[in-house]
Length: 389
Image (cartoon, rainbow, N blue to C red; front, side, top):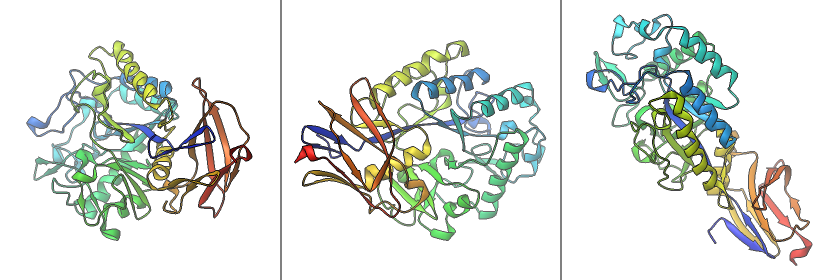
């Protein structure tokens, strides 16, 4: 029995680890990798992207009952060529001309994303993913390869330009999730941090790899951290290479974030995209079966469940199960509904103290998933039952 399962009176209680899917490098229209000729690292895909590539993501989200996060690069959505005046935003600089990507597909894709926002949540992944210094491409847009943040003025200008691209295309409000391009990031320098800047734009969540970030301070936990009101989750390694098209499903570890790249889920023939995403859906659904894991319904659910899973003290006291949330920071991104899985041979009446049940489902495997909201000012949830005594 693992460390997040407890047995009491013939009933097994589990605080499951969340699984959440993040798809990076969505939004390119050109498929080819342009890095060898001073252009961005795109998906290395064999064709242009199309509306069916977005439909594939919706199909996957529906299969998983999950609002998946799509890390979008929006430079090729520029309808007015205004990026020519944004320092470092493109490889063409002041000669920027995006006419090759300006066409009816922009409106079709924008309308599709807006109509399916309950399945696909846009995350900031940059304008063109890289930064061009004196016309030469550098990795990456917001940090250099050493994890040194670019000047606050440049970071803000790029984030503002991202807002303009959203507005041009009617893509909705500013996203709440930030995914650092190339995973170059920094953490731990407080009010001077990129977290402080991102928070001012409404960003509440970040997924990154701490091992690639410049750390001015040690993260509060190896798998999650927080700074300036922003919650960071460890992304781990991608299970497949970023430029592998039509990738067969595989998992490397039990990380809470499954980070894929758009091309991984797509087929050279867009009419066959469904074959790829269905394989991933089958694998992730099977992974979440049982007591140990749960598919998070959206990024907020993932962050809350991860905080409970990694930081809560899950223990037995006499004839009760305790979920002690004292170590969970009182931040909106880490507090709220948490899930508990229960397996028992025969249904029993139990009492929940310190939390309110806001939902319950029972799967075909007879495992019940109960969704709990801690009551105000409560940091300890107690689950008791007279039958256990």
